[in-house]
Structure formats: C-alpha cells, structure tokens
Picture 1: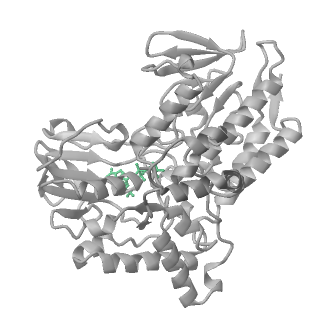
Picture 2: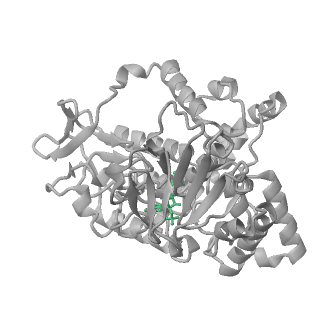
Picture 3: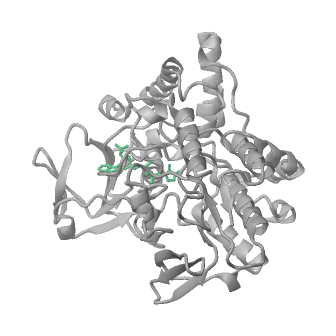
Length: 480
Ligand code: NA7
C-alpha cells in the first residue's frame, strides 16, 4: 500500500465524476489497486494511443539548429520533439549496494523497486536489508507469512507510527464524496497535501498532559505525516519538540516489543526527522520468535557468501532469500544516469555536479523546452496533487509561449534558478530533516553529494508562487 496517503487523495482530482464513482476498498490503497486505477484512467480517457511501452530514453540532446529535442531510445528510434516533458520518477532509480560476493549468492535476490508479480517464500529463511518506508512495510507483511525465519538487517532504527488502515465503509465513502470539492481545496492550499489540517500549535505551548493526549489521539487515529505535522507545528525543526514526539514513540516501542534486546535494537536515538513512516503493526511483529534484527551499526555486513550474508565478526547468516529494501537514488538519479544535453552540449549530470537545481522544480537554464515533472526542488508533499499542479502549469506555459511556430522556446533564466535555489535552501535551513541523513537530502547513496532536493514551503505556497509567476508574464522564463 502507499502507507502515507489516504486512498481519496492518492488519485487525480480533475475528473469529478470519476472521483465519486471509482471504487476503492480501504482507507489506503494496495499496489494492485493503484495499478488498476491508472489502467482505468488510461482506458477512460483513451490515452493508450499515445503510449509506447518497453522503451527507454537512452539519450536526449537539444538541437539549436531547429530548436528541438532529439531523443534516442532503447528500441533504436530517433525521435524529434519541440518539447520534452519528463516524468522519470522521483523514487525510481534503485539504490542497490553491490556487496563483495553478491554474484556468488545462490539464493533468491530481490530489490523492492523491482518486485516480482509472484513469489513463494513459504518455509524459507528470508533476509531484508533496509527498514525505510518500504522495508517496514515488507517486514510487516512477511512476518505473517509462513517463513522459517525473517531476519531484518537494520542500519538505522526508525520511528514508525500506526497507519490506521481500515476498510472503507459505504458511509465513509459517501461522506468523502459529499465533500470532495472542499477536500481538494484544502489539499491544494495545505503544506503537505495529505488532506489533514496541519497544526499551528507549538509543542511546548501545552501542558505535558495535553501533549500526551494529542500524541495518543494521533497514534490511535494513525498516519505518519499526520503524527508529525498534524499534532504540533514544530516537530520538524525544534529539537525540544522533536524530542517530545520521539520519546512518545520510543515509549510505544518499549511497551510493544516484549524482548528487551529486540526493543533496544529497534529504538531510534537520532532525531525524528526522516520521511515519517507508518505501518500496520511493525513493532509487534518482532514478538514472533522467527522474526529478528541484526544491528548493522554494531556488526556491519562485509559481503555475501554463496549461502547467505557475511558479517564483520565472521558470522554468516544463512539465507534462502535476500530482499534489498535499500531505497532509491532519489529525485535526480534518473536524470543523471541518462545523457541529457542542453544548449551547450553539457549534460544535466555535469550541470548538477554541485547538487541538482532547477527553477520551480521543473525547468533548467540552458535546457530549453525541457520540463521535468517532479524534478529537483519541487514541493515535498503527497505527490499526486503536486504532479497535477506542475502538469497544469507546464501546459499553460507551453500554450502561452507557443506561437504556432514550432521554433518557440521557453527557458528558465539563471537568475530565476539561483533565486529559487536560495529560497529552497533558506526554507530548509533550520529543518532537522537536513541534519538527519536520508534520501530527502541526497544522503543515502554513497558518493552522492548532499544537497537540497525539495521545496519545503508547502503545496499551497508553491501554487501561490506559480500564480505570481503567471501573473507577472511568466517571470523567470525567457520566451522566444
Ligand atoms: P529509504 O527510505 O531510503 O530506506 C532505505 C533503507 O535501506 C534504510 O533503512 C537504509 O538505512 C537502508 N540501506 C541503504 N543502503 C544500505 C546499505 N548499504 N546497507 C544497509 N542498509 C542500507 O527507501 P524506501 O524504499 O524504504 O523508501 C523510499 C521512499 O519511497 C519512501 O519514503 C516513499 O516515499 C516511497 P539508513 O537508514 O540509510 O541507515
């Protein structure tokens, strides 16, 4: 399931009839439901005719002679396009640590980013490396399967709160349908676009009893983003506030996990300042005898043996299946692995040597008519509403600039990009997220430069910025 966004806001807002009709079964969607929904939208809006599958873009180059992009594909095609709009995926390029001996491992090997349609782990010894959003979900699910052993290789313990996943009753659905217009209005004006009201109350402004009550209520209600941003307003930047939320979750771990040694390993000590996680019973799964944790900070992995994972102390954990839940080279990873060359022959990778930047999260100087949906320094939110926001704006911008002459170009100015980069930098300067290593600031992939990769001003403010840019004649863009 998508374990943050509720089903009713993890979809498109622009087809009101469909929004009210299309069925969903639970308050959070599972992957097959997301896929079925996307397929349905493609059918309903007759989009299949515009799609070509099993084709990778292998290179793209701006040709100044005829003001167009030349795109090469894995199918050997050379395509020419006046505008190149990319949706390469914010979390798509796998981070797959290549441990020594990996090739010799005789068991089954998976990465959660390329999950097979079917699998059968019954009776097997399964190892999961990584316990981010995906690792937590997969561990929670596999712990209930009929495995011989589930061994979780954990580098950094995480704070996880309940998701509050329940069946969507007809009454619940009806109530959503009746207020959908208001729901989208609120979502698009909010910071994180998850459909809850973000708190404006500082953590320390209420009594300890009231704090406890608010945290407990949010714990019972569920949802990671709601817990972090709907309880109090300062958990992500005030260390004292952060400690209160972190301590509340630590207490929950202590009372949930019966084995004190397992509880100790599962208890985080860092700031509660990574992508907020939620689950359907993660900590309690460690009460099962066949589920255990290996603390990688105490004993790192040194490599793979044919029959398992070899540790620094010489132990080999024997495994039939190893699942890498090690995440992604997020945001710019899919842009830097393909040579995308702009006006002067420079690739995006070269241009982004000091860190990936853009104007408004989708446009880069020297790369005319290139629009990256969810490119670097776009809003950090529940993503469908941000995707829609960018798509609508890019559509308007192209329509506005396109004079009927296929030679029109739209290009961000260097000044506008610098200004936007500074804004993103300033907004996140005091964030505890920035002081805590994770993919959100590019700190999860060895060798990747840590940098600001998101606009943390919120979707509502982002939309205001776009309105102003529009009203001021597409300020920051050179239209030729
Ligand atoms: P994440 O959140 O980046 O989590 C990756 C996990 O893998 C995390 O626990 C990492 O530990 C761990 N990791 C990464 N590399 C290694 C190595 N080399 N050895 C051991 N452990 C490692 O990725 P997810 O797929 O869970 O989620 C990404 C987003 O996708 C998610 O937020 C959703 O928005 C969708 P670390 O914490 O770095 O110590």
